[in-house]
Image (cartoon, rainbow, N blue to C red; front, top):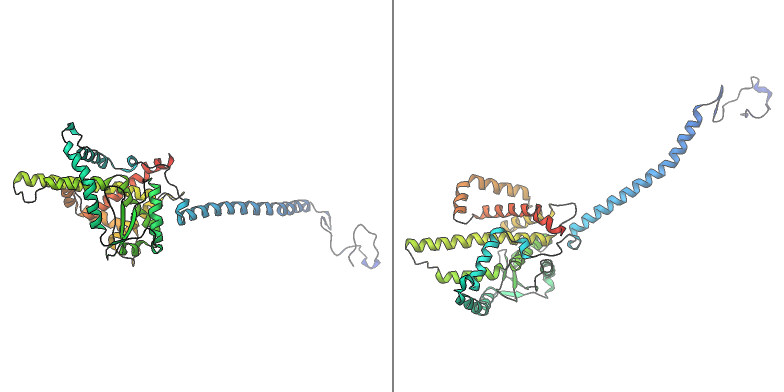
Length: 365
């Protein structure tokens, strides 16, 4: 049996008084100097390990909270960031603003006080044309303000109308059509928003893209585009003569076409900004809503649910086509218009530039 060095030797048979093993802290030659350090290390490890583990747990919890917050904002529009106040002046493009001022002055008969008759015709147009246009556009549509089958449509329209601070929520209609389309109609309250059944098939389950496209249509109401464009087109039709083959007549018609086309293009830029606002901003993901906008415009163009959309690849192709046909694009721009692909690419660049500058300032206010 092993004997403690502190006790008298009980077994004479040990002879040389040696022991089988020494206790901790001692060696056969005496006191072990390394033992206290080992014990200190063991004590530190025993105490520090739970502390390190606790810090790791806390850090993991914080990362999880922030990660869950970002994820919940992506999946839940109510957790995103929106401007506290949105005015039409916050979203209209420069040229859109200038041409809107001209249109308002023309339609109100204010220049030099010599066009009062235009103001009178405007008042007449509000009562007659508004009803006629609305009836024509909605003749094959059905109202779905309370239809549960289109709950996502209704919720998105109501949310976007509130975000843009519209005076009222437009009536919601659905039109049976194989073509994807969504538009607003009316020149005075009550306004209406109409989507086609094919549009719902494309975007009914893609709620963020749906919010962008609904928001941009309501943006036309926010910026008063619907009333201005409808009334201006009515008055222009009074002086536009397609049968005039004279040089001056053709030139006047070309100027009118180019001016209206250019203005319409600018109004789409302003509307895109409203759509971006309605999608909302996700903390930590500054490009979230611009990518939603890119995907929505591409899907609407392709009219397909069977393709997986890569916005970067698609827009790179559009830019390449535009560069290869720069001469044609230049001629279109000289005429105040842009080809369809170029128009969309131009609008996209404007939206991304606005999102990285003025939109960020709008969120800080």
